[in-house]
Structure formats: C-alpha cells, structure tokens
Amino acid sequence: MGARAAAALRRGFRGQLITPGDPEYDAARTVWNGAIDRRPALIARCTGTPDVLLAVEVAREYGLPPTVRGGGHSIAGHAVCDGGLMIDLAPMRNVRVDSARRTAHAQPGATWAEVDRETQRYALATPGGLMSATGIAGTTLGGGFGWLSRAYGLTCDNLLEAELVTADGRVVTASAAQHPELFWGIRGGGGNFGVVTSLSYRLHPVGPQVLCGELYFPADRAPQVLRAVRGHLRGAPDQLFALCLLGIAPALPHLPADLPGTPVVRIAMCHVGRPERGRGAMAPLRALPGVLADTVQLRPYTAWQQMFDPGWGPGARNYWRAEYLATLDDRAIATLTGHLARITSPLSDIRLAFLGGAIARVGPDDTAYTHRSAPYLLSINSRWERPAEDAEHAGWASELWSAMRAFSSGGVYVNFLGQEGPGRVLEAYGPVKYRRLTALKDSYDPGNLFRVNQNIPPSS
Ligand code: FAD
Image 1 (cartoon, rainbow, N blue to C red):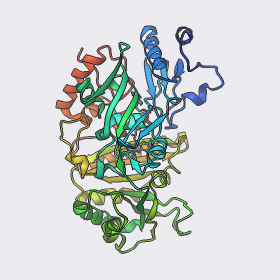
Image 2: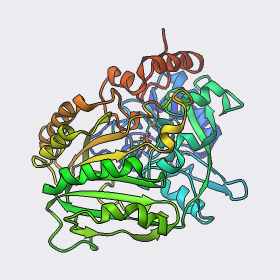
Image 3: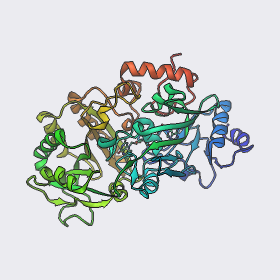
Image 4: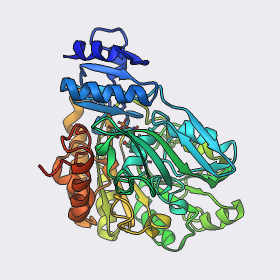
C-alpha cells in the first residue's frame, strides 16, 4: 500500500518521498523519544501547503493513517505510527517577522530556536517552551508554556491565526474572525482537526538580554527551597517565571567541580522586565541559605532558551508522567523530596513549574486549553539509555505520579501526556470542553482521519 500511495503522490508532490528500504528511512522515521520504534509505510517530506494537501488526500484514499511530524518531540511518539503515512513538515521552517506590527509568521516545521532567532533580531518574542529544540506547531496546538508565560500567557494565547489542511482536503484559515470555533479548538485541542501549515503569533518586547539563571542547593534543602519558592511566587511580579528541578546535578562547565553527580534541587528563573526589577524579584530566593551555585546573570534570551537543551536531546528513552497540582503543601513536598532520594537514573528529574500570572487571566472558556487556574504543573521526567532498564525507570516515575495524584487539581497537560489512554485525554479537558471538542471533531474530521494524537474521537 505504501508503494501504491507513493506512486500516487509522485504525481505533483514537490517534496521528498521516503519508503522502507531507502537509505534515509531509518533516520527519517526516528523521533525524539528513543523508546519509540515505529515503521511507517511512507514518509512524505512536504515543502508547502500543496504537498500537505496531496499527502492528506493520498492518506485518505489509500487508507493509510496520517501522522504529522512537526518537531517530533511528542513524548508518546505521535509523529509516527506503524504502517502510516508520516506527513513530515521539517522542510517547512521559514519564519518571517513584521516588527512594525509585532507579529511573526512561521511554518510548522520550525523549532523555537528558529522563531526566537528571527524575533530577537527586533528584541521581540512570543512565549515558547522552556527549551529551544521542540517544534512550534505541537507546542502551540497543546497550549505551550515557557519562560514568558506568566508575563504574556501561553503560546496558544498569542496565536493570531493558523492555516490548516482539513481531512476533506480544504485549506482554511482559523482566527477570531474566520472559523472561530476551529480557532478555539486548535488552541489546546492538539492536532485533531487538521494539519496546520502556518502559524501567526503576537510578539512582545523581550530582552535581547534577560536576567536569568539557576540556584543549586543540596537535596536535603529541598523542602525549605520548595516552600520558599511557593511562598515567593504568590506575590512575585508576572515578569518572573520559576521552575524547580529535583535530580542529579549535571556536568556543566560553569558549576563547581564537586557538584555534578550529586542530588540537588535547582531553581531556574527568568525575569523578562528591567534587570534592576529582576534583581529585586529574585533577591529573596538568591538569599536562601545553602546555595551551592548561583548562575543568575544577564544573558541573551536566545542563550537562555537553549540552556536546557544539552542533556535533553533526541535518542534517550523517555517515560514521563505529569499532573497539574492544586496544592503544594508540606505532605506534597515530602512526597516529592522523598522520591528524589530513590531516583533511578542520573538523566531523570522531577520538575515543578509555577504557573499563574497571565496564564490564569485568560478566560477559562476562551480556548480549548484547560486547567488555567492550576498553580503548579508537575512533570516527572524519567530518562535513561538501556532498553533493559525500561521497567525500573518507568516504575520510578509511575510510583511518584500515583503518590502525587492526592494533590492533583484533577487534570493533566495534554502536551506532557504519554500513551495513557482515552481517560487521561478526558482529564486533559474535563467533560464540558471534551464535549465541545467532540462536536468540533464532528464538524472538521467526522471520519477521524487525524487519530494518531491525543485523540478526541467524533461522536459516531
Ligand atoms: P511532534 O511529535 O512533531 O508533534 C506533537 C503532536 O502534535 C503530534 O500529535 C502531532 O501530530 C501534532 N502536530 C505537530 N505538528 C502539527 C501540525 N503542523 N498540524 C497538526 N498537528 C501537528 N511543552 C511546553 O509547553 N513547554 C515546555 O517547556 C516543553 N518542554 C519540552 C521539552 C522536551 C525535551 C520535550 C520532549 C517536550 C517538551 N514540551 C514542552 C512538550 C511539547 O510541547 C510537546 O511534546 C509538543 O507536542 C512537541 O511538538 P513537536 O511539534 O515537536 O512534536
């Protein structure tokens, strides 16, 4: 079927077609999570919207489930499936900035590194993820939070317009004025409704230098540190974003020589306002007792965006569990810190993002993204190299997640979901929004052509 579909696609397709047996096949089917090993029937590397249109048509006609690859960072590996047609958007990565209007227009194969590089030429940015290598399309469609989110909202809150190829082969623009319900749904509802072929974002003045860095503390200070960050962020300006990481200190050149390899708690922070205000906003945390290393300084925003990339590149095996937390009381803190002592891999960590600010000020029904009022987002990121160790490391993450459910706000961030089943997709949206998304699916993809994702099936 793959060969027949490839023959059909060759009539008019301008990009590259890759089938099993081609020398590029193995590299092209590989996604970020090294635990995913799937063999698509055909990989269609698209150069533009006409290629995407053709690929969608051929997938439908030949009965090959389409998967869409943006940056390939889905934890669940949804960019690829066995026997499917991978619509690979990697060649489509052009970014254009209109500095006068403060907007950026990007193709969906771009990463945050590419968008930030172009927008920062004008000291502008839109909120992306905490790292630079993730794809902009997947991030936006699921919500998208990062260093700028308390100040300027989620990535999807800054989406002005998107072009999509729908399951029935139309090219539509979704915005507040056109296909408004679709525009609502793609801001959090994932890739369920079509293939996004371009995205336009609102930009904000950022940097180009921002005050940012990390504080390292010994693991036995973790309870005090988490309590301090919890208290401080309640009253901190929205320009300050903070993330706590519990894990093993990485080997980085700017850290004291005896730190790598030891269990630590870290506060990673970025302030996107005036540096002197940032210094004031960070001062109480920098003054906490027990600081082993303080890397806070002015840096280019683009450099800070790439700070966490080393150590989180493609290839390693990953099993992540996540949950929004309603509370971070002392019992929750004890559960987290107790589990750090039993960490099974030096590559794994436990992350706690402190949300609020502009994220929580958008109306709860304005976008498909849910759980805006949850103050904390926990992600337990288990990561290792050897397949023989899968059960041990996944078990560590699952055990902590189960224990932390007691503190859940009842939801999960769809972009951090693994292969966790339909019940968890429902938890990502809650029953009311899920029903609205089902109705949207009925309108735009009643045959569930786009089903290799955190799927919202049509009603019949
Ligand atoms: P892909 O695997 O290519 O796609 C992910 C999903 O989106 C798939 O279902 C895919 O089919 C769909 N999709 C992608 N492009 C399109 C398109 N053009 N049209 C329709 N559907 C499409 N999230 C955050 O919010 N903040 C973070 O700081 C953050 N950090 C991360 C760090 C790492 C190392 C990783 C692995 C993930 C991180 N994430 C973060 C989660 C990330 O946002 C999601 O994994 C996101 O889906 C990645 O998008 P992608 O395009 O790279 O992935």
